[in-house]
Length: 618
Image (tube, rainbow, N blue to C red):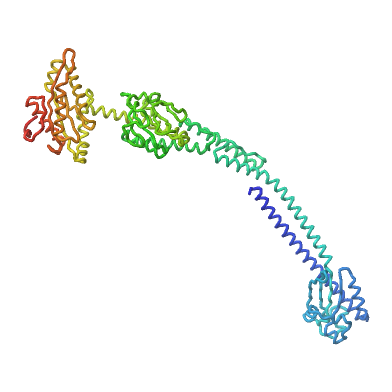
């Protein structure tokens, strides 16, 4: 029920109650007044009867008393007057007239008590007020009762019964009450009409406020409250309108600017207040995401967090994360469908060989096949209806990563709405990934030999703990190979350092070709190299070493005026068979290398305990 209707119902109820109360009070008051008037009238008539009878006794005309009473009964407002003798008068003067011995309960009560008695009677449709007044003997005045009656003072001599008709009075009372009721009802109706006119501006303003506030809750601040008056109610409407102007202007500004940050075009069909809140929340969450990834140590941790956002915040089930190696113009998948992977799944494998085949990598722009199907020819759908969006992560002005989202037809509407928010996370991740990449590059540069690209001795020193712990955990041995080119100094002395560098680079390439990705090749110093073959006992390591030796012997290094062939000597030792200390195993491999050099060079020698002389200086 509306406020105006509630107010009117309340006031109508109050007015109706007031009318009823006033009507009842009027009726009760008129009745009391009528009874009081009838009582005073009856007492007056009774006093007249007493005086008349007393004078008749003194004047000797008591026998004419019936005529006197009849005349009184014809007086307007009096229906009947009757005198009833008491026993004392009967004893002195006899029974008198027949009607003077009337016996009614009310008369007997008055004769015995000496007190007035009043009652209302309904006879044949007429309303009668009956008063029975005692006639008490006293010696007051001249003449007085005791001059004729031989009775003690205050003796009840009789009773005067007077009937006063009230039917007409009742009718007049009903008319008066009706007039009062009509007057009250008319006043109430006029009050209600005036009240309604006064309430109309308030109720209309309240209804306008209700409608406008409901629209505002839904994010629509364009509606205004109509001003219906110039009083306080009008001031309320004006203040609300000014508040709506402020909210529409400021929230619109916030929404527009946050939309610019997100690259998100807001829709007029959505709740603008809720949308603005969502956008601000997204920026806050993206800022917290950036703070978290800045504290991560590696790129892999950042990728883990990014995958978690895609999975649990935006419910993306199928996606790929590719990392671009700009120096080699290749792309490598980091994650595919939430798993670390080395294989393309939703793209042509060509992108792994030629990164420029990827449109997002090549252009640095979003590839939105939701709105432009078939935009990228490298996409490979798993099932009919699948499409994709590829979002590049820009690092130092070029594409460093590409995030590919695979979208089904039913998920496309949600993805269109979520894309700007996902893009914010990728934009925040870009600089941090670039910083981590640079740090890794610097670290990698510090741990690799600049000329050969092989790991250096510093890397080996840092890697020893991990290497030994892994071997112990797997309970698998590994072998250490110490390699040294034979007569390398002659190359530098005869052909120059440029030729020496070329020989070193050629050997480094050969070593890298002959080891697995899990193995490690280190330039230990000068023309000396060290290799660690994981999960490889000494017997197998001897075969690898022999293969390397024979390939080195067969390799020809082209110089400006000649072809150069060199040989290599290799020493082999095994962890933990030869020693449970890594650096001791390295020492044993070096001892075996010394043995290979001493026994004629260009050979592979397995360490044996008898080769070790603790006092010797190798």
